[in-house]
Length: 283
Image 1 (spheres, rainbow, N blue to C red):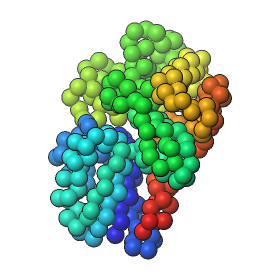
Image 2 (image 1 turned 30 degrees about the vertical axis):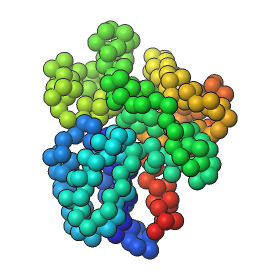
Image 3 (image 1 turned 135 degrees about the vertical axis):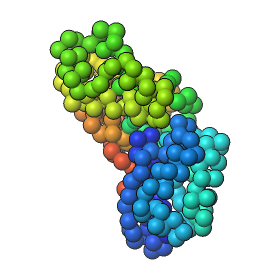
Image 4 (image 1 turned 45 degrees about the vertical axis):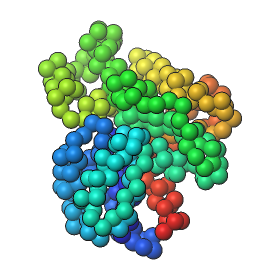
């Protein structure tokens, strides 16, 4: 059995294939980001999934693409957990950018591939290798244009009284904005980046409001400026996107791409389908 996994900060999509590439099952767990979760939390999330627990000894190969897996330390941290949980499997761990590349760009073709989901990232693919200009420092300092970026912006503007009154009242009705509740989630609970990203739903649902339009436009432009424009060939090769923010704000994203004279490639909400097709060719 082969397991293929696309793991974001919020959730992980798992697809199992047999040796002929036939799909055996599809399942989900919560996100398994090694940067923000302990060994015990990750082990619990694996153990609490029925399909994974039932089939863990059958897995012979695991291809894991995950948020927070950009360093050897984080890769080895996850590999040690997978070795214990899937005792007969050879595990390969790569950062989620590779999943985005394999799902949007053909081998041998050049392109810039971006992640806009709970977090954000951007890489240049020369047809064979991934090249990154920006080293991520995590959701507190980076992640421009992401779900947690927009969530953080909304909360700050609400508390600094920069959100229009009509929208602020609506925002307060939909979320518990008590300061103690917010601080509990940000500083004491796991996955603070995922918590912040839950607020992005509000900006998507109200994207026609002038305030939200402005926040979205500035956030996407900031992502373009800080990430995409780092590459010399930015205006010469297709720029593709994966992630929920890219999917739900694709009209706004298309407009931003056009304003910056960029070439839009593919927009996918989830890269897992493309990943499966990629790996079927190697089974």
